[in-house]
Image (cartoon, rainbow, N blue to C red; front, side):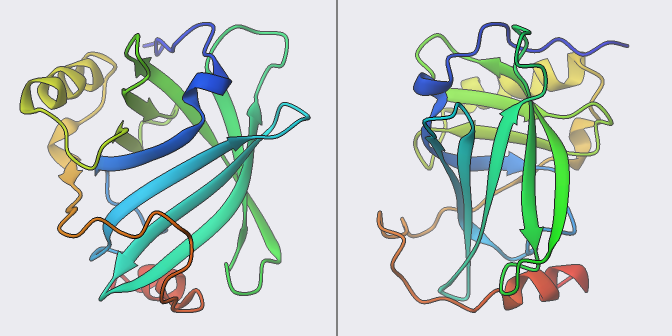
Length: 181
């Protein structure tokens, strides 16, 4: 079944801070991470700087990457994203798909997935989302063939600092996540 993606995504409007409301668990995110968020900054060359952050035991873990349109001439919101791992010694490139399956007209919430349906994210401009909106996005994901029973809500107990300056763990969260911590 072909997945429907957003057409004519406005990257300028999409840029900015997004909070992870829910996601499929993955090996590249700590299981106990809270206040998880992503910040997208449009670069002059049309690519997007990606900063993913999460807090574990009060310490900030983060990874930076770059995203770009998979087909620069196309109108579909199919992006590719590349991170270098491990974050504390970025040597190995890891590239994946980032498909925007839905974004509301005001660019306040989004549903993001990828073609294998192994990963799914529900994002919002605020750390909390109305239950009705959340349920609508879960339903959309189900319609696209996702097993939504795997979705796990992300806790946002304490809003993290707006700046990127906070206690860091030097990227150890990445190693811990590989071992399921």
